[in-house]
Structures are given as C-alpha cells and as structure tokens.
Image (tube, rainbow, N blue to C red; front, top):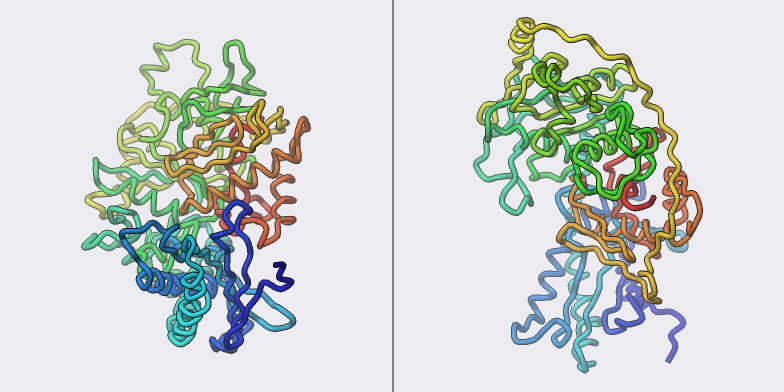
Length: 525
C-alpha cells in the first residue's frame, strides 16, 4: 500500500513519518511539528535558543516513554524503543530540533526515531498512536515559558560579551564565579570546585559581568603541576560555544575562531608551506611539504599554518601536547647545534600577533623561554589565578637578550587534489563510512584520526563532518579541490532534512564569518 501523505494529526500537532533507511523499515523517523500558538511562542524569538531548549525538555519525555515499555529481558528490536538526540551543555543549531514555516504557519519541529517491536503490530500502533501523542501533549502542557525566557536572556548576555570582544583589545573573558573543572564524565561542573576569581589588576567589567580579560597578544598561563593550567585552557577552548545555565562555564567567552593546536605525530600532510617554522627538510620540500606520516614538529607546524590560512585569530597551545623541539630551544642547545632547520615557536609567536593579528594563549610549566616574549603572564596556584607579568619580566631582564630573527611570509597558496580519494574501498562496490567513538573515522580505504579535534562536543558533529568529506570526495574525483570554496558551497546546498549538517561545529571560522571544518586537512591530498 502506498501512502501519498505520511502525516497524521492530533490536536493540530503533525506527525510526519519518513523512512530512516531502506534496510531499517522497522525504525522510522518521526518529525513532531507543534504549532507556535499551542506553546505560546512568538515568531520573533531566537530560533536556535528555542530549538535547543525544546530538545533538552523533550529528552525527559523520551525517557518517560521508554520507561513505560521497558523490558530488561528483551532487546530494543523485540521490545520497541524511542530515541532522540541528547544534547551536550553547549548551545548550537541542530537538525534534531528546528523551526519551520509550513503554509504560513510556524511550527517547532522535533525529530525522533522509533524502533518498532518485532512482529507486534498492536504494540507498534499503541506506541505511535497513543503513547507518543499523550507524551507530546504532556510536553506542551509543561512547556515553561519563564525558563525559556531565562535561556533567551542568558544567550543575549553571552552574545553581547562576544560582540564586545570583537570591538575591544581582548580575545577572551572568564567571568567571576565560573566553575572551570569538570566532573568525571565531563557533563558538567565538578561538585565543590573552587569558583573562578579574577586577579584585580586584570579584571574587567563587560555588560555587568566582572571577570578576567585576556588581551590580544601573547598570554602565558603557568604554574605547578595540578594547579589548574590545563583546566583553564580547556575552558577557554570550550568558550567558542555558548553554554547553558548550570554548566559552570556560561561566562567563559572566547573568540570563536580560536583553535587548540597540538602535535599530531603520524598525521597526513599534503602541499603545505611550513617554512616559517621548518627551513628545510631532507629529501622533501618545506615550501610544499607532503608526508603520509608527519613528525611531532612538522605536524604542529602544519596545524598552525592551516589554522592561520583558514582565518584562526587565536591559538591555544598546551606544552604537554606539543613537540618540545618545535616549541623551544635554549641558548645552550643553540650553541651546541650548529645546523638547525627548526625555528622554534618562541621565535615566531610575537611576530604572529604583530604581522597577521594572531594571538596565542600558551600553557607553559617547564620552561622560561616564553616568559620573555609574553605580553601577559598568569600564574595558577591551586586553581587561583594571579597576574605575575611584572615579576616574570624582572626575571627575564637578568638574561642576555637574543637577536630577533627576520620576519617571514605567512600568506600561503595551497593546491590540494582528491587523488582518487573515495568512500568506496579499492575493488569494492560497497561504500564504507564509519564514525567510531574510539577516535577515528573510516572513509573507504582511509582511516582518519580525529583525536586531535579538541573543539568537538558530540559524536553527531563527527558524523556531519564524515558526510561532508564523503560528499566532497565523491564530487571531486581526480580534480583540484579548492577547500575553502568547496566547503562553503556544499554547506549552502545542503538541505536540512537531507543532511545532518546542523551538527557542524564552530571551531574554525573564516574571515567572512562562515564556519569551516579543520578536519578537511586530513587525507584530502
């Protein structure tokens, strides 16, 4: 039997049913379309905040539905189950919840998947036509407009701080009272953790909030072991997103182009100019550097050049995740090593800000090399920050100053080809696309290491990246790929119900404000 309209209605709420996949007809996708007037919503509301809020509220109702049918002696396929995406503590646009205008009427839409019970049509009908409808009515009845307005106000304040950062001399802000340490499963603030308090001499007030401001330039975060250095950097990294109330990091706000850089030994690199950091490489070209297995220093150099090339204006670097020979070289080693191809990051970090406007925040605990080039130095002592810039500069005056090396050229031209990259393994007629929770994705014959993507907050973002890589790979066989334009065009063409691109991260932003995927550097040679 063929149905022309796969939609059924109940109290003005539409339930639109689609097939998830041709091989899983027992697991349909249902889009619940609730009219704005039934929820008391205004058409001028911030749609991203509304959609995010609704999805978080709906999660409790999904749990209630599953509790009503749970049977521990049966699998979901036998018993039936309801599924929906469970958001993390960051606010972003998703395709699991969105606003849509249908025939001039505004609807809040929530997408769920239902596992229908195997060979039990009566239970399947009860799940879809009674249980689901009843729970949706409960959702509508309990929809809390006061709580929703509080979410609007929080996001409004966060966005005001972001706008202030864009027009000021600051690249990041940590509000007083923020809880930076995370609990065991990284789902929220650590219980009984010490609230953040800014040192008075670097405290600023933005939109009625007081906290520590980090200026453009070079900032060093230092301190002893387990003092909170890396926790602060992790909080700044997550500050590219707005966080929901109760997360503890609601007012940790960072330039949205910020990117955490690390060494990634073993990564693939194709046609990138790394001469600002690596002057020459035996049997290879530093101007057009390519390798299937990069070293720690060459991978970190490539990561920085790629980030700058795609519009990153703030680098976040932890020495624990960096290649030591890339980061520093002291005077004794300079005297001993006469022929050194590596220009350490200490020699370029100041120039990065002065020449191309790229600031750096560095976690340093084992070397004093960066103190001399830092504009601001924050000492963490048992999670309490202290401005020690003047004290550190006084120590640096006792050392013999080095000659500054000549400035380099930071603009790069890069040619990348797909080079037969395909989602079809060689000799196979079946596509292979796997996104693992273990830190890698498989596309055709290629295994891509994604553990270095520190700005990812959910598995769904990785799935979106994988689909976008697949789409670009399929459409660019044996041709030069213009990465920036390709991603931009594919994002514009992708339709909401066809692709899951609303999970895209904000972890790399171009000069025109569009969000791009730093992951594309991998394996698209």
